[in-house]
Each structure stands twice: as structure tokens, then as C-alpha cells.
Picture 1 (cartoon, rainbow, N blue to C red):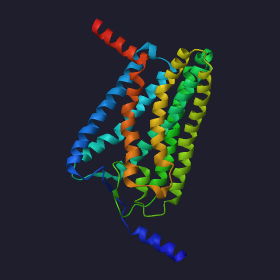
Picture 2 (cartoon, rainbow, N blue to C red):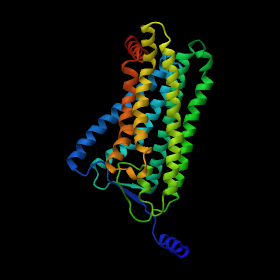
Picture 3 (cartoon, one colour):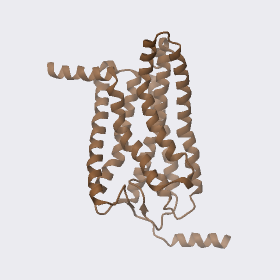
Picture 4 (cartoon, rainbow, N blue to C red):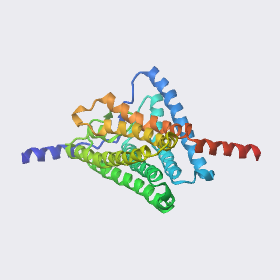
Length: 320
């Protein structure tokens, strides 16, 4: 056994490190690639415009200077970074003949994507706590959700996401990549990159699973508990109008949580043996591209405060 392991190490040392990876993308059909280019370019533009509008409104409108929109502002900025990390390169690859990404570029994309995804898990938990205080302790809302606490919660979300990403990225980059360089994906995601390592990845996959429990299921479980208290408080409201109004303040957040956590759990909380290439592309496609585009629509279409702030801004422009 010792001789065998020594031989493996010697063989690996003779290989040259992979300098670039080839991304197979969503399809090899050229006609479909052009169609997908147009579709995802449209989604990307809508996502950027929607999230930028939310950020501008939350800065310019005094009616949106509340903890809820502070966190929404963070979410909008995160979604802009999320899609910009993946979509521009994906659009280039739809039109390019050689669909490559450098080793360093792949590592950077992997780190940024994982950082933002982890941060969103914590950020959605912070937003759930904000709704909990607003509905379960409305008289103490201003005292509890003071600017310092909001800043601490947002900072903690970003730091937690970055730390989680550092752990996975460092563990992945320590592996030898000495042979295959074709990634069956449209971007460099950790599980897909691990498939190309010239070494046993059991430790990496185990760490991914347990971190997924801590980073994904931990916040998700706390969100469920939080909404248990929220629903209990709403049911105690005497009038149906009051119940409807209270629930409407949570509807957007519940929708975003369902879309985001649903696809994340499907992707990362299943055993490694059940991974299917095409299915593993659909979940990241949804939470990395589609969800960031839907978030601003979800938070604005039925939100009177955001719509009102937008109309106020337009009136000022016309009057000015």
C-alpha cells in the first residue's frame, strides 16, 4: 500500500497543471446557442435594470430609509454581482468557438459565486428576522432594528459568505488538476470542478455537505421557525384586513426564500451519487440567473412603498 501511494504521488508529479478549462455550456447546438444568447442577454439586462432601480430608489427616497429596504438594497447589490459573475462569460461562450476559461479565472469565478450564494442565505435570514420584529413586536421595532444592528447583521452575512467560500475554494485549489479539463457546466462550480481532480475528493465532498447543512439548512431552519412565530402572531389579529395587511408584508420575502432555498437544497443536499449532469445545470441556472431577475419584480410589483417611491421620483424629474 505504501509503495502504491508513493507511485501515485510520483505519477502526479510528472503531470503539468491544467492551465485552462473548457466549459461545455448548456448545449452544443449552434442554433440553440444563439437563441439562448438572446434569452439570457434579455434576462441579464432586466436583472441589472431592476436591481439598480431598487438601489437608486432606496437611496433617494426617504420613505424607503427603513431596515427592510436596507436589507433589500443589500440583496439587490448582491444579485447584480451574482449575475455579473456568471452571465457575461456565458454570453461570450454562446457565440465563441473556443469555450475556455483560465485556471485562475475559474478559481475566481468559483470563489465569487460561492461567496455571494452563501451571503444570500444569511441575508435572507436577516430579512426574516426584520419581518419577525415588525409583526411580533411592532411597538419595539424602531428600538430593536436600529441602524447599528442592521449594519452588523448585513456585515455578518457578507463575512460569513466570504469565509465559507474561502474554505471551499482553498480545499479545491489544493487538489491536483493534471489531466481532464472539460467541465460539463456553464460556469466553474465547485462540484463540477471537483470531478476533474486527479485525487480523491471525498474530504471535499464531505466538507461541502456539512457546510451545506450549516450555511443552507441552518438559516433555512431558522427562517421556518421565525415564520412559525410570525404566522402565530398574524392569526391572533382580530380582523381579516389586519391579517391580510400583515401577511402582505411577508409575501415577497416568502416567495424569494422559496425560490432560492428550494433550488439550493435540491442542488447541494442530495448524495453525490445522485448527481445528474443536466439536472445539476438547471438548479444553478435558476438561482444564479433567473432568481436575481425575479427578485426586483417580486419586491416591486405588489409593494406600494417601492411603487410610490418610483412615482415620486418621476414626478420630481418632471416638475424639476
